[in-house]
Length: 257
Image (cartoon, rainbow, N blue to C red):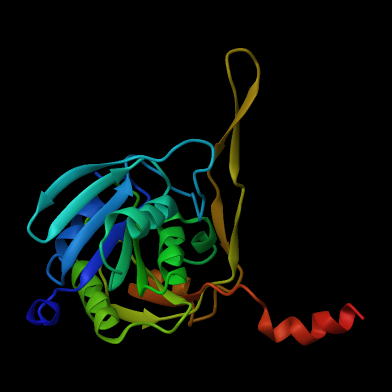
């Protein structure tokens, strides 16, 4: 009984940039201050995987490191695979929290639906685990996370203490530079345009590189994640698993008559 009372919170960590990315090393260091940590992360970059699952070949994982309070595994699958495998095969009790990241690059606005970082968070949420995705608006492999770190610790502590509503997780993004504070915001309405660069190989055949520019459809709105980031704030967006447009159910039912 005493062992159960003194048991540290179990925190599951993953990402989509790979197990040796700087972001996950920073997140792991921070979370070891709050509990016992198990990391199950892809063995290489898996960006823009959303909730993808590996279904055409076997998934493998291997132990990378084990010491008091921390166990790390590398997995051959996607971020969502990592969470599923961790819950079914690796951890011996339900995690008290799942955190994903820190992603090198923004997952604000429409990026949330493409993000492997947030795909893992949604998988944790689906399994009833309070889950948070952390991202920074900096694609550099050597991004500076120092200003973001106290905010990550604060958010993680609050989630551990209070949990989250059923079916709700958090999408947290930080600006690349100085941080002015924290804003709870909504997802900005916008989309990516000019998404491909067309080039030609030596044989005259066309090929394409994914690129793009983000088009903000509501640049004057001050309650969105994009506004928060543009003005130096960490954005926290409560994100739902339930994709039903509840406010439109009656209208659509009328159309179907």
